[in-house]
Length: 442
Ligand code: UDX
Image (cartoon, rainbow, N blue to C red):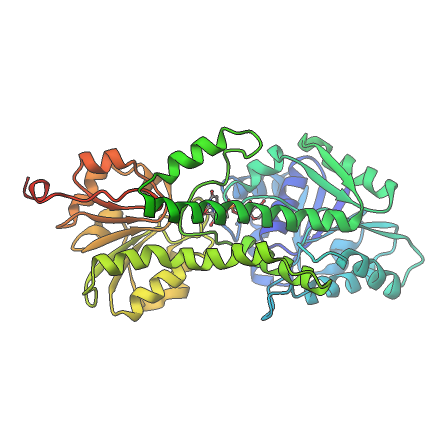
C-alpha cells in the first residue's frame, strides 16, 4: 500500500482520494479552502454523491484518509501525488491551466524524495509534458519526478460505483517503472488498465467525451426529424442500439447534454484541434445542435401557450442529470431564464438541487417542496431532469393541474400511459398525445 497525496478536492479529487483510501492506501487530500477542509475532516462531503460521505467517514476513522490545507504536510511522505485541480473554461473555450501549473511548481519546491505525479485533471494534449518541464525546471531537491497521465471517466451520481466498476483505467507515461506503480496502486479496483504514451492518454479523455456528446447530438437531430415524420425516436434508438457496433447507451434524445464535462471538453477539443490548424467541423456541429436542442422544448411550450405572460408554469427537475445536485451547464438555467424574461410565474421542484438552484435563480422563481405543490394552480408542467421520483410518479398526479398539459424534455413516460390517463403530452422526437374534446369533458 502506498502513501498518496491528492491536490484539489473538487469532484474528481475527492472521489479519487476517498476511493484510493477505501482500497487501503494512506491518502492526504489537499485543498486551499479552509472551511471545506474543516468539514471534510469531520466526514462531510461538500458534494452530493451517493455513498461518498459514508466512505469518507469510514476511512477517516480507520486513519487512512486525511484532509489539510498545507501542501508541505500532504507532500511530506507522499510517494505519489495526484493533481486534481480544476481546469475551468476560458472565454475562448480553451482550458485555463493556471491552477495545474501552480501545483506543478508547488510539487517541485516541496518534494524531497523520488515521486510520481499523476494528472487526473482534464488537460489539453501536451500539458503533461509541460507539467514535467515545469517540475524539472523548479525542482529543489536532487530527486526524480515522473509525470503520468491518468484521466478520469467517472460519472456524477455514480462516481463511487464507477471507481470499482469502470470500463478501463488509462495510464499514459514514458516511464515503465511509473506505469507499474500506478497499475499496482489501482489493482484492487479490478478494472482493466490500458497503457499508452502521455499524449494519447490525454487525447483518450477528450475523444471519449466528444464521442459521447456526438452520440447525444446525433440522436437529438434524429429525434427532430422523427417529430416531423411522426416517427418515434425511442423505438428508433432501441432498434439502432441492438447493433453491437452502435451500442444502446447514450442514445436518449432530450434537451441536450449539460454538466461539468461535455460542454467544456467539446469546446476545448475544438480549440486543441484549431491550435494545430485542424477544423473539427463535426464537433462544432455537435456543440451547435446541443445549444439548439435546449430551446426546442420551450419553443413547443410557447407555441402551445401563446399568452404565457403571468401564467404559472411548473418546472420539475433542475440538476443537469439525476442523482446529483450539480447545476453546472444544466439546461434548466437557460430555460428558466427565458421563462422569467417572459414574466412567467415559475415554480420549481428538485429533490436535491434546490439549494444550489437558489444561488442561481434567487427570488426570480418559487421553490416548491413537493411535485404536487408545484403542479397546483399551474397551467403547464415541464420535466427537465429524469429523477426516479419524477419518472415513477403516478401519471394521474398531473391532473392536479386544471388542464393536464405536460412538456417532457426527458421522455419519462410512455405515450400509451399518457393517452390512457388523458394527459396532453409533448415529448422529444415522439408524436404528441393530444386530447380530443370528448376526452376533455370526460
Ligand atoms: C461525463 C462522462 O460520462 C464521464 O465519463 C466523464 O468523465 C465526465 O463527463 P457526467 O458529466 O457525470 O459524465 O454525466 P453523463 O451521465 O455522461 O451525462 C452527461 C449529460 O448528457 C447529461 O446532461 C445527460 O442528461 C446527457 N445525456 C446522457 C443525454 O442527454 N442523453 C443520453 O443518452 C445520455
